Image (cartoon, rainbow, N blue to C red; front, side, top):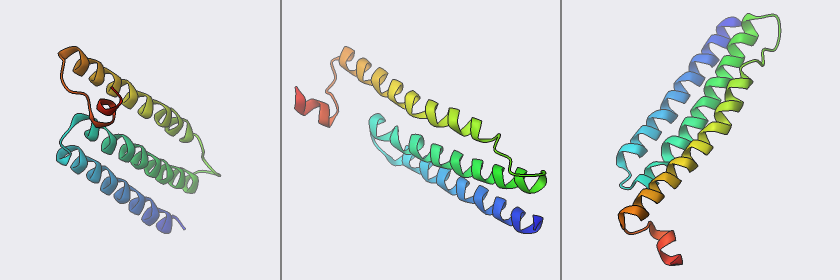
Length: 111
């Protein structure tokens, strides 16, 4: 059973790497700061969930039973990543308003 678990953990880690690579490509290709925020925020959270699942499988097969201590990490990360993204968006919007630049699309129509 540990060989099957090792293959599953390796597959999950490779899958997580692919998700983060797609996020990096989105960060590189998207033209605006507000568009660029979404790709890394969403994909890094998904990548972290996949790594957490791989860690649970790894530690559960190596230990005496189901190991769920890794959930603490992903809970904190799942709370802090969206909050950080919102704070960055608000700061960028504030700086853009202070500079007198045009607002992003949806906000421009409301004014």
